Image (cartoon, rainbow over all chains, first blue to last red; front, side, top):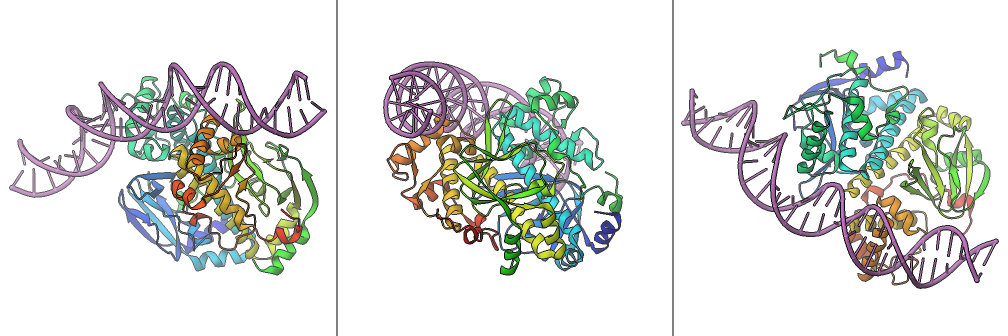
Length: 234
Length: 234
DNA sequence: CGTGCTGTTGAGGACGATCAATGACGGTGG
DNA sequence: CCACCGTCATTGATCGTCCTCAACAGCACG
């Protein structure tokens, strides 16, 4: 997508809003008339089960669309919601604006299609990952998050995720995630500091995880641009 | 997508081809200049790991596109391939033809985007499913396959999958899948006949699986039409 | 009539869940 | 300033699920 097309998209954004940690951005079972774009912060795409457990499908960073699926498949109700992990802010684009851009030519549609394909690809990758050990699984999630954050210019080795978040993303119990983290600390991959997930040896982490990173190699990413719009420090 | 648009698509198809069980339709690491459409038979979207194991991401039926992801993300190499489960035949559409249709207006692009979104949605569902028990997992896969087959007019209660296929799809060992199948037979959900997966009590199967089926409720499915084109019995 | 693939069965062991209790930290109100 | 509470992190013990290894039976194929 060329620069002037990004500009057009940006000009359609309206209604900035702030949300605190734990707040819902996209509630399940809610019908929408606009898509939401994450401007700053971290969010979890998740699903709540009847018994109160939750499953995190992916994490989102600035530049990600939160609820494109509702635009494409409005009837479908996955019971999938998006929840704030940290403080953050969002912008909104009306469906009618999207309609207009799509009608203009195939470029914009291709870009959105591509974004969805990437999501699907990452989901598939998660499936692969799911069948391996807990150590590998957790390490893989950490690698993936580091890589995703780096792509949008966030370079701290400290991840803003609680062990609960990691457990729900990895499909493990919190207790076991804790033990895995202890192990990673023992291997000098995570810092010794308690109450914090800080990666100190990324190379070894990638080795433990069997992390490839190729699947994140996104040609023509849709991200990278919101940073310029928002300009807020992170 | 309206009927006349489907017709256009059909007219762009060329190069029918037959493949035997076990054959590759889409090999990993291969660059393409066309997309492939499954006309008849069953295929597995899978990935081979270094150690020889394989992981099945999904099964495909007539009307499914085998390799849309290569069109959208040509650079990306997931090492994902498509393999024949049964005998089957395919057709081919050149990238240039797709380009042409996309340029014509947003309808076609939306349909393809939607198909991808559905894939992503099914992948996510699989992730949910993965964290539950083996019994639930296998039952869920069986339900899903029955539902998918029904959508395109296949109503036999006999699934053409080996226990190995099911194991690779569920992320379980073959041995354990066998035991789960024994259990399902004991519950009179599967037929007693060995060497065959035949569902006799679908309702109870759905109950065991916690199967919802809503996530397969595809508005404006891209399938259903190849059946009319090909006309071959199944 | 061997050879190979799928399915079946048994025994032992590793991994991760669950239950339960405690510690560390931050915020709130008396 | 301190007691109280909620959330997150940590640790121990026990138990169930599922994997691995190993052997064998049925069936198709040449």
